[in-house]
Image (cartoon, rainbow, N blue to C red):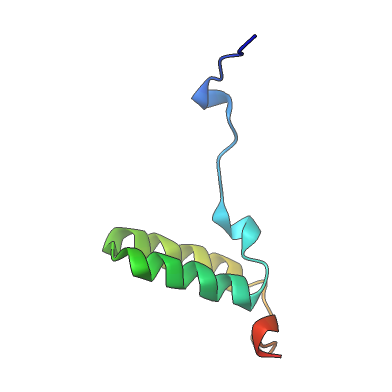
Length: 65
């Protein structure tokens, strides 16, 4: 039996929870920039600004180590 899902019952999605290291931030920004949508880019930069407070600015991305 198929159960109907009410979209209002779903939790809000926040990408910031997935941006847990510099490499993830770089990948996220690259994907958003490739899309070419300035509104999406502005939103992504706001997401990155929110998570940058909890990240170590001196720790390089794992892909560079």
